[in-house]
Every structure is written in C-alpha cells, then in structure tokens.
Amino acid sequence: MKKYIFTLLLCVAGGFSLLAAQGSSIEVLDKTAAAFQNAGGIKAGFTIKAFAKGRSAGDTRGTIQLKGNKFVLQTAEMTTWFDGKTQWSYLSGSEEVNISNPTEQELQSMNPYTLLYMYKKGFSHKLGSVKSFRGKAVYEVKLSASSKKQSLSSLVIYVARDSYQPLYILAQQRDGSRSEIVITDYQPGQRYADSFFVFNRKQHPNVELIDLR
Image (cartoon, rainbow, N blue to C red; front, side):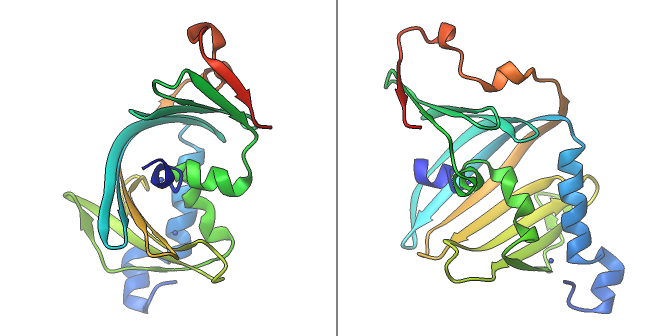
C-alpha cells in the first residue's frame, strides 16, 4: 500500500458545444492549479484504493496538510514531513525515521496535489463526458502521457465546477496497476508555521534517525 500512497492526489475540448458549456481543458486545468495556489494552507482527507493485476491491492485513508510545496502526510502506516527540501518518514511502530532529499519524481508520487501540475509537461489532455460525482457537478479531465517512458500512463481527474477543487483522481501506471484517490473534507485557508513541516525530535525522543541523504 505504501507504493500506492507514493503514487499519490489535467484537457482540449472535443467540440464547440463542449467548449461553450464547459470551457477548454486548459482553462479548467489552469483554474484548478490557480485555486490550489490561492487557497493558502490546506488540510484534506483522502482515501486510496489500489489495484494490481486486476485485483484489489488494499486501501487506506489519511490526511494531508499543505502550504506551497511543503506538506505533512499522515496515514495509519506512516507520517511524512516535507519542508520544501528535506523529507522525514516515520513508519508507525518502527521507532525509525528515514531522512532524505527526494527527487522531483519522488515528490510527484508522494503528494497527490502535484498531479495537478502534470498537464504542463509531458501530458496531453482533454475534457471527458462525466458531469457529476457524488452529487456534485464536475469537470472530467483526462491526461495521457506523451512518452512511453513515463511510468504514469494516464490520469483522470474530477474537478468541482463551483470551486475547482479536485474531488477524484484515477492514476494508471504503465504496468497495469492503478490507484483511485477520493479527496474529502477539503479545508482551505489554514495557517501553518514553516516549523510544522519539519520533524520534531522532541515529540519523538526515542526514535532512531537514519540519514539517507
């Protein structure tokens, strides 16, 4: 399941009638990215269902708290802090914290919200036909990787029409595995000090720090 969490949470319209009703895919994507940038600190819940070789590979739920490129990700299995450069990963019950400087690709798989920016490089995009999700009016955005070298082959994202908040992300890997992310309890306008995104040794005095940098 850890693999699918780290694979955590956008389109040219097919015709003039679709353009008139929904706007272009690039407009939806730009507005979604802008809404995220302007939201300030964010706290959101999420659930992930993972599938491999056509079978369920498990599911998990958790929360993510973000400010800019900083985040804290919490699930029952682990907690991860990232301050914009350094990442601390604490596996529950292990009494160990791994310290690393993740690559851009690793960050894209760690933080679901980085998927919102993938349309800007290496992906083609278009609007889909889905109009609602869990009772909310949405835009469906489909992205396809331009290169077969990309491990992530495609994305489907549902974006709320009224707020441009992402509600659902389907990430399809080239090996056939996929993960479905549902975003819940979205709370923008949160205030976080920069220190919130740094591992606090005083709160975990007995853990062993393993520096992988």
